[in-house]
Length: 276
Image 1: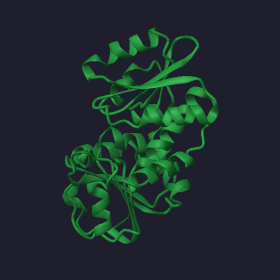
Image 2 (image 1 turned 135 degrees about the vertical axis):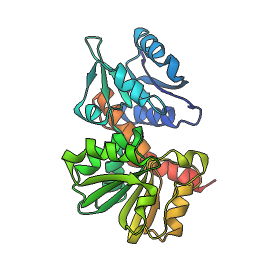
Image 3 (image 1 turned 135 degrees about the horizontal axis):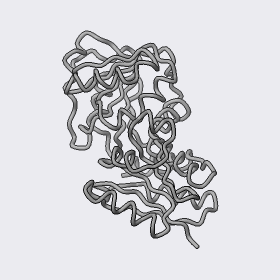
């Protein structure tokens, strides 16, 4: 019998997740199906309940459902508890639902293993203080950067988030206007601005010589933030395609007990979009 998995989100038609998990299943010889389903926040609890009641084994939850998935999970991994956001649900043998967050692990794997970057001792700027930032803060701080600054349109939200993670390292928060005169080795965009082709209001001179820009969003064309990084002279201005695939590989391992090889899929997707 084929095991059933899915991704819930809104919007969801653009999702690459069914193809990613289909690739991983074929690579590792797993018999499973994986579908993308449009789910509005107000219907989330009922739809998740129906999915697992019908025999589904695991779900990914994307925008805007990660905080709802956190509330739904009866058992949570330490990193999910820390993030207060869940992107992966798994039905356990006793029927309870486990919640995990593989976003931060996926990002760090992409930065360190795929792009061969160094995080230790670096000055990091994280743009945005929403659920996407929550999921990646602890894994970033575990890499022992020199400092991590959170910037957000609402400064108080960034300050609150920084205070929540202050026990893990030198993290601070503030508004975009507070960034003037500061300089960073790595700038990460975790805002939703790229989804609408916009940019956060960033002052000039933020990126240090040889610095790197990374947008958690991705697309077939460079995002607005990736283009901004290129214009700032970044040594690398990257998007989140690798993070997407790496967090999926971690979710696949959680569900199936085997970690797929992500490199062939990253190479395939990169080739496809450069061929457009």
